[in-house]
Length: 76
Image (cartoon, rainbow, N blue to C red; front, side, top):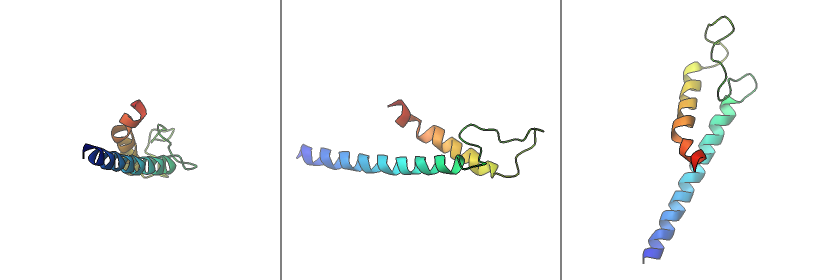
């Protein structure tokens, strides 16, 4: 009966991976829209003030989520 449990665990992990990849792609799309900051672009303008055309807290949260939670996928 170990095989049945192993198969179920594997399928659960594959589903979790697919959900994480979907979320990861969603974050990349949000950050890389035309005029967006991208994954590592500046959040301030040329004069050193915060950019008004982006939601800085949302961008920072997306970048943190992308870098922290998904970095192990890139390393494996």
